[in-house]
Length: 414
View 1: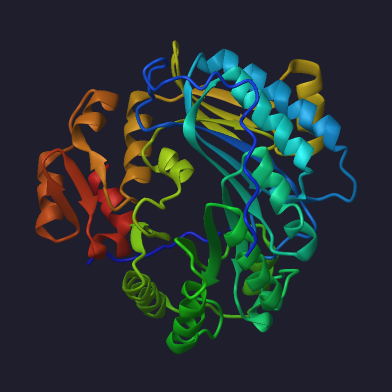
View 2: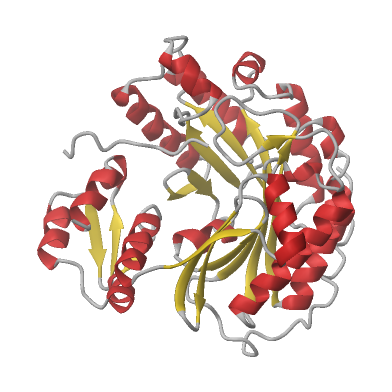
């Protein structure tokens, strides 16, 4: 076994109103615009929250008053700038992340979606996801988001236990979470929610009860993350002081394996290391990342990967909301960096993302990106150890390989 390799990422009945069409979309057929290998998505980052969760290292900021009209205009301006980089594309997915996107006014979401439809070609069955927190105030906006075109909600539930929610710094109760799940289920065609497990003192029995309760609520997608300590967070400071302990490596592995077993019994397959879905309910936007597609990122701290006439570029926006906003108003974008991604880096990134997926990666595509094949002896060695499986052109991590994925990648890409 590869030692020191276990790691899991830490860290979202009334008839639904019909969604409005994306204004400005030409509704092209698939053949009118060339498809992007791996897909093409647009990520919109809303950086504001009501409070900062102690485990969160995302680019989020607590701001009391936000001029939503000003921010909508800025997001549209940056999208327009990004269209100049991408050229015409067929949009497969749109994702509003954060922060807390459910603090956005419906008009802000509408403005962004209208701009996307005007600037690019939007696939007829495009997945449009929005992250939300299950407080009663934000839940009242669900119908407005659906009418604007959002067809998938991702709820940041994190736990179904009030004591644990308090520990995690969440503002909602378990009862509010269940009500929000029910409301979202009625309004949106697709629903996912997040849970964080491997919390201090959490037993196998307690997690099994909580997970089964979650699965009882008619979900078709769950994102299940083990609690990890991220640098610079409140939890990092508390952990350093010894205020709490996390499960050890063996306990974490046992909890992970139990998670897969229970989800499998409910018909949700682990299509990615921390994501479980029923057939055809996988998150299309995240698949763009994991399949190493192209994606635009707009908003403070947003990242992008784009194939242009110059080659593949990586973009990253300024993290500070004020600095980003000022830059957009002065320059039409808030990009802090725009760098070329070398052939070798592309191959590494594709493997780092793609081996998280159950479907794995294409060896031929790796060779096209890098100009050289993977070392055949290394692949065979890892297959022989039961850590990788190979079927024709594709390699994928086995269940055993997923438990030591960092080590597998280290040996494969050395």
